[in-house]
Image (cartoon, rainbow, N blue to C red; front, side, top):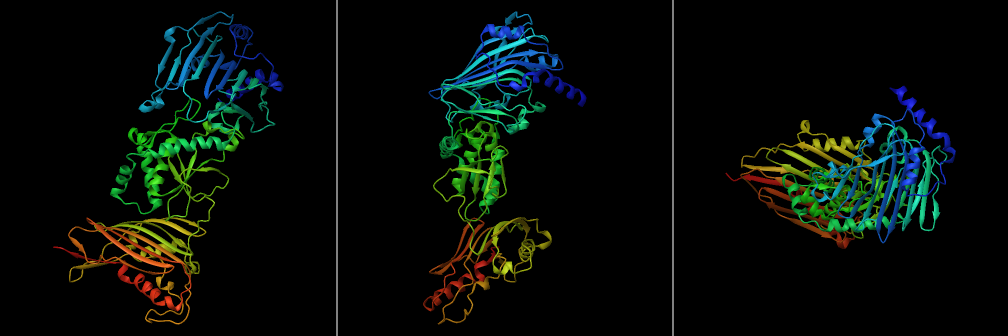
Length: 631
């Protein structure tokens, strides 16, 4: 079988490389008339070891007043029964809501030039399988055109026009690859009006590099001859490896990005039903932090929205509102971006839109969004994460923090927030913990961040060992689940599952539960020379370093118990603050421990306030719960 394919390729090259040196030609400009078509049929050479040959393909585009009209002409010579099977019933896709399709001619030519037209019942509109379950996209239609009376050696001629009746909300841009499934003897592409174009050759010195276009007034024209089939008949898989022509209504990425920005913001602002959906997601298992919310939301997004990738009509479909996406449970890649933008805005994430670095290989100066499908979204999930994450709308996945500096940011989408290049390093000592603990079955799910402070960096323990020992200090060590960790220069993020069996009640029926604190000795934050037992100090004190601790405990209490330790607390002085807030909603305790200290020097006049701040923040009662049965 490999030998057969090799012979076929050699045969293709033998027939088509005769005039390769002159890939550009000065043949007559189309669209072709009947006489020119018939001449090509009658004078076509014999082809062997091929399935079919495109004798002529012409594409003629005009853009005026924002409306695009495309006329396509194709003359195909059928060589084998296999080729007949694959070219006899072409499908012409169009959006009936804003486009009109007109079939100018559909004919079958015999080798002697005699022809007959396809009958009226040879043209049938069908719903593409890709949109069958997407009610809002049923305006996208495919016309199945059936050529009749075909035999090997015959030619089929198809001439049709797709004209826009309503401009696209996004600027027109399209990529054309002259090499296709079958060898092409003659190919012509013409663009007239308010269009920009460029030729892109991945290998300018290659055998099949495309020429620059001829320019005549406001018309760009490419005329090519003797094109072999796309290598391996794998146009889609080759992506940016084959020569192509890019046409667009705008000539800059910034202008295209501006149009996308307007459409995505408009779609994300109309988000009725989004808050209820997010509340439902969080009802069973509360979000521990921004990263946990991002993970849960993207997983739910993939389940909630079936992905619609069918978009054969030249430009990406205009994104619908987030409300409508949630109602219909189907989304295009652009709509998934809009939905996650709305989620990010609701959760306080920072978001930014960008195109992959491959955009610079698909095209150079002229933007080519059509072949890219959709931009990516870059996110930072709020105050409790220093990592930037990337959302891939087609796969619905969120990948690890942003590290590829080769990719090209284009614009910020939501609000005038800090740029992505802004220094986001945490304080020298920073710890965040978000923990959900179900006291009924002992399950714990936790996520957080720990910076590399002086104590940790001087400790021979690796972050993995440090985390394992910390978890082992307050959980049932043998049942601790595997944790996921991600280290960077400033610290490490972690996520873990564990089992913690609550202690037994004492003889008074009371249960004392100590909630986990950071994996560092809080006593080390006391400035050198300070003794908490002393109420006065005449020296100026210097804290070791700034510190930030933010802990959020969500505790599901067992039925039949009451909380005895539910007082809130707070203390502070200039440059430092501590708060402990506890609220009980039904059987769920929501407790937040927040300590911030800038690390500024402490004058003797501020010693008393600093002492009270530390006595309150370091009081073991701040992280202790006392429960008592009500029976």
